[in-house]
Image 1 (cartoon, rainbow, N blue to C red):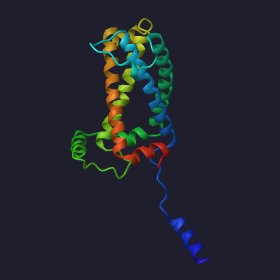
Image 2: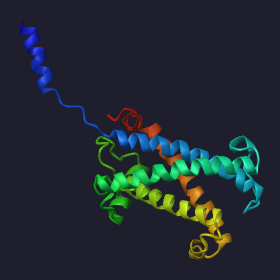
Image 3: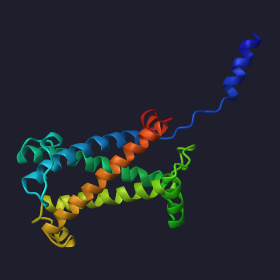
Image 4: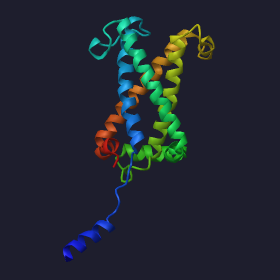
Length: 210
């Protein structure tokens, strides 16, 4: 009887499990990762059909097999990415997550946290709070995501969206902008995955929320 009372007391006074990543964040995160990988691999195959630079991507890391197949994959993933991205932006603003997580971003904070990260002294004790480097990277990749979608739309429908093409300075420049944004996203993914491996509890939080 006493042991049961003690157990009940411990259960009542136990620290509640803190939810780091809510369900909707985890859903859009993994959906976005899936769609982005499809977009990148099919995009590399599309690039190979008309390279901007003096190199092409290995067929082993491309998707679609040829230009027509790559375009089908690219457009299919595009709709998934756009719907998912708009959902993420809408919920991020509506719930106040962007304001809480990404603001404020200060130059001093970014410099200090960058130095701490380079010397492996950056704390990861509280995963519910982003450090200044994370804030800058996440805010930056959201901006890059918007730009890559707009540049992609201008390339897809250059006649119908001629005003959008004009904003980029022409079709050819839009291609370079699109490629640059792709390179930035790939760089972000490499850093993101590397940090997730260095801090496994952050990956666990994105899978189970806690």
